Amino acid sequence: MLRACRRLLRSGGSIAYTTIVAAAGLDDARRREAIRLGPPAVEATAPDDVLMERAGFVEIDVTDVTPSFLDTARAWSSEFSRHESGVKEVLGEPEWEERQGSRARIITGIRDGLLRRVLVSARVP
Image 1 (cartoon, one colour):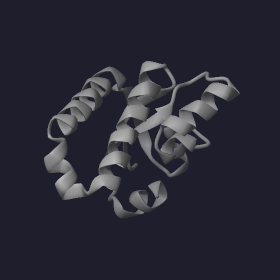
Image 2 (cartoon, rainbow, N blue to C red):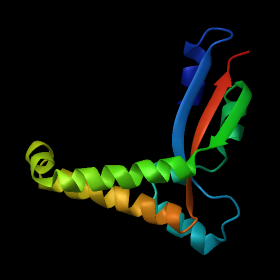
Image 3 (cartoon, helix red, strand yellow):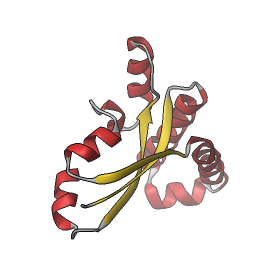
């Protein structure tokens, strides 16, 4: 996907995105737990800066925004719970359960030092 984004951008164009990744330095068991708790991107075989470089981007910056994201994730979970009946009415029970479960797993992964949220930005040469 990053190579496709690179092809779409003009010279000098920029890209930025956030993603959830496994924390650096995890042993195999803790990495498996991070993968279980996080979204599919956690299984990436290389760090985002390496993937961006391979796709042809330059001036790559990866900023850890985990503390503020943890506050946001906790607030989302709390507010969704506060409005549970209305949200369930719109989403339906299965989607509600999946979203709340996903939030809870990510919060646990961050709290346990297994996951982190990063902001990645780069430029096309």
